[in-house]
Amino acid sequence: MGLIMNKDLTDLLIETYGQTINDIISKKNGLKIDTFTHSLKLSACMVEFVDYLRKMPLSELNKKIKHKDKDLFINYIKNLSFAQYDKLIVMCWWHDIGKIKISKKILAKPGKLTEDEYKEMSKHSVHSANLLRELGFSDDIIASVFFHHPKNFSEKKIYVFLPAISLLEITDIYTALREPRVYREKDLTLEESIKILQSELEKGLGNPFYKIFVEFITEKENEHYDIFKKFEKTTLKDIAEKSMHYIDKSKQISAAPVVKNED
Ligand SMILES: [Fe+2]
Ligand SMILES: [Fe+2]
Image (cartoon, rainbow, N blue to C red; front, side, top):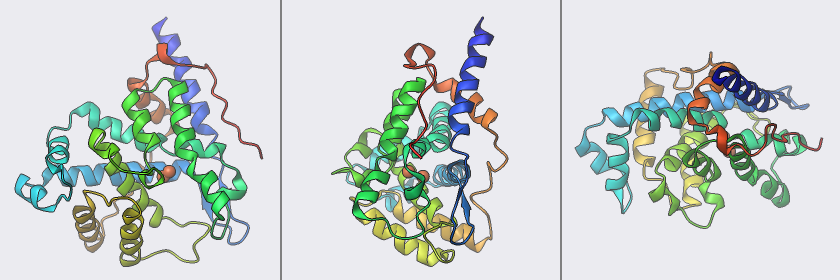
């Protein structure tokens, strides 16, 4: 019985994620991007960065984390349980799932978004959280995904309740900056990416890990180490299997979330 129920859930997860794998191909330069690849790259960047943080001596963390409640972030890093670590990966794999509700015209637009289009695009984190709620994901995963673009909200106090959000924010912005995108003429260099990352973070209240993150990406770049590679062979089935540990089937709202967009 349990097995059959698990199989149903796996199918549901695979089906839900499968729909975002539709490639978004820009007519302009034939560039291919998809939420799936972005999410796998993000999960690799996240794990590499968290491992980097965990290896850092306490005194260094203390010097380099910038936040008035910095002990909270230090404790989070130093006492990260296996489940919390694992959940960070699951969050990365699902954080942008809500993009399936955003029109492809906006997602694949080769230029700058208008104000209205930007507003529409900004809703994807809310759509993601709703889908995860329907699938029965645990509340901390849902909340972290909901707030993964904290600059869209009036303040970043939420960091203090869910430090994972600060990690998700910084690794997500950077991953997107180092990917080919339809609205960019050419790939950004490390230096260009750091500049944009900083200005993006300043639209909110900054990010406690900014200084360490820049140190981390600079070090890896100098070593020619690809921080986006670790999970590149991950399949939908792997995602479904890991995710199942963080889903409460009794909390599932619908057996088949409606994930189609209008176009
Ligand atoms: Fe996002
Ligand atoms: Fe993202």
